[in-house]
Length: 575
Image 1 (cartoon, rainbow, N blue to C red):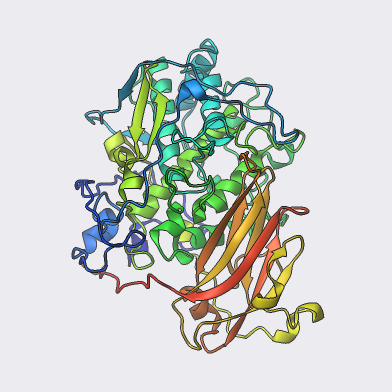
Image 2: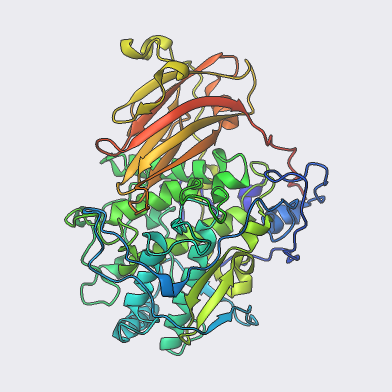
């Protein structure tokens, strides 16, 4: 069984202390080159997949270049033009920010070359680091903060990287005044991996330690579900005053942002959320990675499950409610000002590593994207020598090739499938006003309160289906979040550890030229049908629960469709 590869423990709340061991990812390194297939949106079904053995289940699936090639639909996103960097926007006023997020400009750009990898840098859990490491980490950040503000390696300039790339300062180089945005698409994981790589290398260079590695905030494990203690010393360089004071330890992070105040329930909710994001709700690589984003596309094609879920919740949960826009962590333009941002994103990056190489393959057998528009998308970063460097997605797909790995930590969520719900929800449980509200009559709707709607299935008894929420139009300047339940009998929306909870949509406030963005999400129902005994039902009751206050979300439609990428027979995991 794949999950036995991890030290999961009998109970996530009473797990044994994690062992001081490390895992090393050794994917099969195969060329990234990709030919074109006749189909521009799906892998070529005529090309057989290679036979996969048990070792590939643990170490190879999700590796570089094994997926069927895909055709290029347009052109890859090109690096921004630094000399045309504009002014990012204050989300409260719609006016220019009072800070300049643009980096220093240089005419010399070098292409990144993968360095020879000797000793692998190890990123450890921030809750478990030693006093010696903490002092070294603090010294590195202090040195970065001591650099002149116009030095591209300075903490201010490093924080501004996120502001410029994420809050409307850059247009796509192709013209047309279309924002360049590195969130809400398949660029999310690669961009942030590169961002952390150079941030980490700069820190190591400043303290003359080439083996220096950032820690990660282990918020997916009960032992790490508080702000790490090393970030609480007000005299430390890694302290930030702009954090939600109600969420300092011992407060347990609420990855669902449900407002539930019972710590045990919040932990259980968190583990269920992680199981859904990483295993239960994904039908294809794009459900996890995010949708395709090419030159000329609008800046919100669609976020993957991790980005719109735990990633967004951590940002908002840490952001300071005393500030105008949830600064620092709670807003894209200011998030990089908090050192906690970088260790949050190392854990986000760790989720990508785990999903690629270590999770069972039977949920999403193909975890690679070999579309040239993905592989050749490029960014610009200043390196540890203050040289402006051009990087591509294809060069960051393997973390070991970049010289780092993660400490091995228990994954209690990997077996946290919610308990079956055998009793069927009754139609009479829907309030009178919604009894006749079907997906055909209720939508489009503005989601400002709890909504329940009957949605017909495609076929009685069919389990391999997807729930699709279409044309989700959002005000990008606001924090917005809603959760999705199916046949929720107990109607306790702050409790997510049940089969009825199927997924979420959420966004961190950011700026786009239009002020709004439209996307869609799909949630895999295969396990839901098994867990809820609804295969023979003709309709499902879908409940949408907003977690934000007031307007900001319009949903164009909701439907259930047959899964266009049904799960193939999984490779055996037996020896």
